Image (cartoon, rainbow, N blue to C red; front, side, top):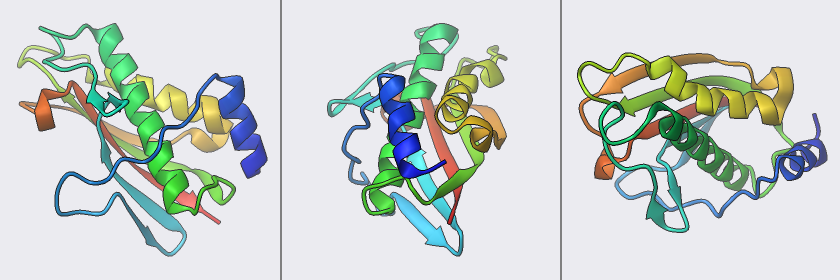
Length: 156
């Protein structure tokens, strides 16, 4: 799919990618190695504010956590677009997502939560958005957000 196709698809979905957010610590938001680009973990922030804060299974519903994961995926594409010089035309596909869910100890629906990000990648890139994945629970995440997602993409 060409960049124009990716942009058209995002527009069709009603998605306007935000500006990429600067890192909050000592890391870079994206790293290219050969035909692979690694995107650092993105949290569900919008307009400079964290969204979906708290533990999934207690403070945040599964449905809201899925929305959080989708927002993480939107922020991933914003970082990817910036790393690629302002366009997505070199994206061949999504290789892998890593999903982290800030959950209560008894919560067990991590894969269902991270589907919010996975489904978004397939919506945008079609079959090229299908990827390998990890969906794990953790005791805490930065600023107590409910979800964080990182990604690996193949680029031309």
